[in-house]
Image (cartoon, rainbow, N blue to C red; front, side, top):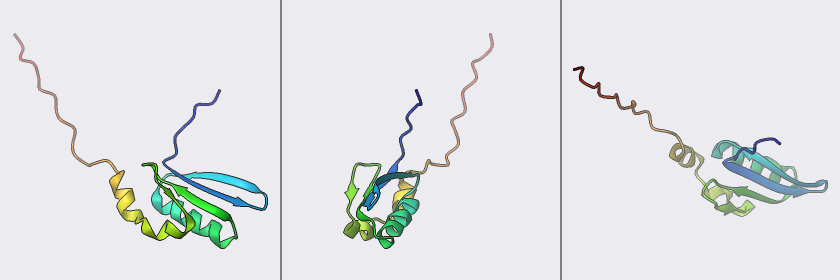
Length: 88
């Protein structure tokens, strides 16, 4: 059985052929896809965020993609160096 991977950003929509659930790794990519689906005539477009918020099509402007992407990046601090044990 294939191992499931969690996609942080999920874009969902329904068109005349059925529904589609498409995962994206960043907020920018998810918003770009959601707007493309709306232009193509897809109904009921939703964006699911990693924190569990569900954005409807009319709420897409409320999400600032750069602020959201920055919140999920890891810091660039150096790893702590281990102390050496004194030799006896």
